[in-house]
Image (cartoon, rainbow, N blue to C red; front, top):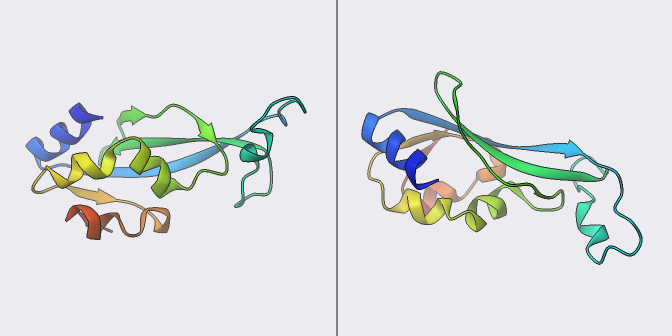
Length: 111
């Protein structure tokens, strides 16, 4: 993730960030975190991953999967994206409402 943010900042490129859900089978009853896989958005069992691309659509980063109940902004915080973006002066990130609030925390311009 460090290299992605540095790349976007150094080249003045626009980044695009979004979370995507992948439908999964319901974990076995003995799985202790079984309920965490239920997505509040789609009401189905899912795993979520966050993808960062550049403006040309090249994939720069794909995160490890998290249970579907994890919000996009929470996933970004857990990956350290907020900390990284706060240290880079001029980066523009296109993001949906799932990342609302990151701009105020980082000074990065979101659209």
